[in-house]
Image 1 (spheres, helix red, strand yellow):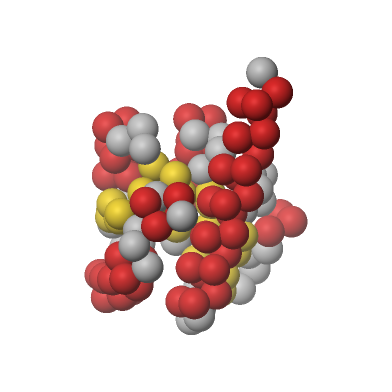
Image 2: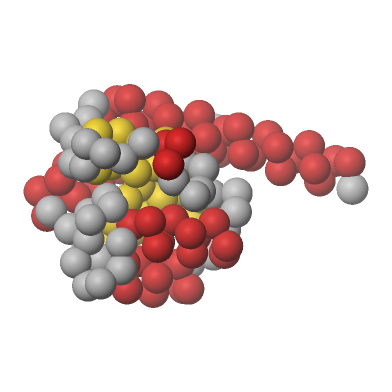
Length: 134
């Protein structure tokens, strides 16, 4: 399945959480790129056109937030899956300017991976349908 060959960008400033998420995604067959802040993530986005999804925290060091990154990715890769993992209790999907799924920390890794799989499969099917109509 295309999901297992997909590339995911993980942006998390907490090293242990980043490592746990990376390992879980790799165990599912994903190729994972990892960053600890938005500027590092932007570098990956610029160099890797194959990024199929993003899992990001919102509150990140360096002056730019995960919200900034979500917006940038939406402009560069509108078909990429988008997941937010955050410790902020005030964050809800309806309040965000981009379409994404929000998981509150501590989150269930299986649920995050299932959502990522679903978004990638859905977006791939939509792209295939569009190509067939063209």
